[in-house]
Amino acid sequence: MRWALVKVCLAVTTMVVVAFAVPLGLVIREMARDRAFSNAEREAAAVAPALSITTDRDQLERVVASAGSDAGMAVHIPASGAVPAVDLGRQRAADGDIATVRRLGRASTTEVPGGSTLLQPVALSSGEIAVVEVYVPESEVTNGLATAWAVLAGVGIALVVGSVAVADRLGVRMVRPAQRLVEGAHELGEGKLGARVPEEGPSELRLAAVAFNSMADQVVQLLANERELAADLSHRLRTPLTVLRLNAASLGDGPAAEQTRAAVAQLEREVDTIIRTAREAKPQTVAAGPGAGCDAAEVVRERMAFWSALAEDEGRKVRVAGVDRPVRIPVARADLAAALDALLGNVFRHTPEGTAFAVDVHNGEDAVIVLVSDAGPGISDPEAAMARGRGSGSAGSTGLGLDIVRRLAESTGGDVRIGSSVLGGTEVRIWIQLDGRAPVRRGHRGSVRRRRPGRLVAAFNRPRSLP
Image (tube, rainbow, N blue to C red; front, top):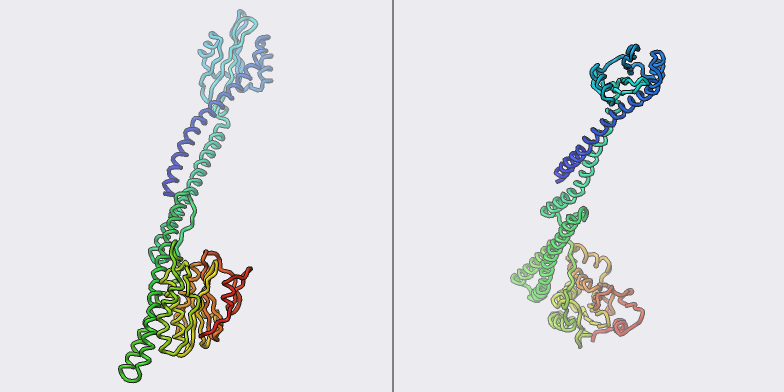
């Protein structure tokens, strides 16, 4: 495309330059010829007054000499009566041409070796016609013509070169975005998901680049969603695995019991491997669509009914609060259930048997807070735990549980905090925004700071205890 545009511009500009340069060159040549013969006419006119007064040879020679053209001027005076003919200077024109000019009484030019001559008739006092011959050499006719043509050719070449350069730049401006679009498509096809194309160039190519970048973003989003779905589904297997592990622990001794416990441990390791593999790409948060949502109180009651049976087997005290009335949140039911299972599974996995835990739901005007607290040993470094949830797992933990909870909260404009609970262990606070605005500022150790204290703040700061 680039060279095609250059060739077209070269052809068009060359035709335009030729169309203007050739006629202009001919005009310049005619102007040079007219200039040379105009000078000859002026020289002949300088002698005409002297001829009309006298025909004396000596006086005419002085006049011709004063005109400065004695080398190229000749005067032909015909004989009159007893006065013989007078010829001054070198005659170059033919006698017939001189006689014709004298007979017609009109100026004329004739070709002679080395140039041309101007034959100018002049009326004498005797009534005869004298002829002044002025020689115009070819060099004078073409004087300055070569320079003018050279300048004209230089201007034409400059125009052609300039137009080609401009066409080349325009071609680059058009071709380079197209090349980048092709390179980006190749990179994306090779699996480089970060390949993007600069949105530059003509409007059509800019629109193509915008469409390509949008497509690449959609591809990355779809792949990330698939990875997250695989990781989430794998992590949800941890809930039945926890049940299996607890039941296997109560089987007692014996080869069958040991084999069952080894199989459960192997299965849990395989699930962890699947989760880590699926999380190689950075997860992308996908917010719930319009109209999506669930009753948080109903989901908490349902999941606590499941986990309470396991808690009873391990002698754990359980408390649930704030689920006596509906609490609508803009989160899908399955996502909230997965987040609760992840947090409660961590309680059973990382705290000793008999450790109490509680789930509280606090409903406010613009936010809902879900608290999962326990009486275990707590988390020594909450920031490291949250960082592990955003990145890869550490020893004994994939880090995906907290990441599931974080993405659920951030999809609504909220966030997650880890602190110390009133039970003496860990408290995970899920802040879910109801209106999609940025989350309010929260203080240390679970306190909520707002400009105007409301029902949510009072309920959240009120001391809680297990029954």
